Image (cartoon, rainbow, N blue to C red; front, side, top):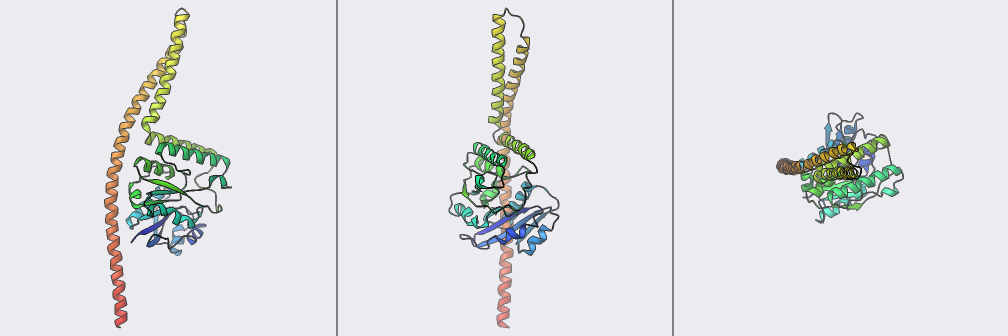
Length: 340
């Protein structure tokens, strides 16, 4: 039996969650069972209670607000433990059109991908400011460069995962998971693709964007962090080569002036060239050390994957046994009623 679990990370989504859940499907072509899971990330507005009242199958609650990335990671772990073969993630503010879930999981069902990202029509979303649209495109470009993928809307949270892909992914950021998971997929050689999806009218302002300056700063920090973590050799080597090239140019200038001006003056150029060459050399050495550390990180991720897989499979076996016992109890009860 192939099971799909739709997970929704939530923080104080009491005003919109019922609407979001009201559009979720209970049947999707290609899967045998559809379940819903809500991750309440320390909400104070009764989000968990609303989820239960709307018939959500599983509710996982953080005792305090840990951030969207942590809520997403908790959802993946919970879905794996409950035997999910496919996982669809979407937001609790009803931003994404739930009717597109069938299109989203189709490449996974057909064996063409392990991760599918729902690409929004960014240019056609009216409530996105020009600055936000530009940053969305910049972030997507950076992710494409770092991951070797062709995802046009990397910040989209509407995405589907196979069970194997969910086991592979690790989220380190506390701010957002969207960019990092795509890069990890590219790093691990997972097959990732995208499909166009529709969006619903805006229901509330984004909580990730408190102000444009804050959003720009966080986006730039995220982009730099992506290159430092996943392309450390290229990142530090580029900086080292630039510093070394500047030092070399200034050094050549000093030599030229020294030889043509009779050997006097311009000692500042010699000092600056020496500093830049030293910094460039040290940064290039850091590039090699960072590359060695990235190898250790990949080995640690592989070990973590094996442990997660063993744990998730154990949870799944327990869940299957419980389901079989419930089924046997139900059949026994029906038989006793028929006899009685």
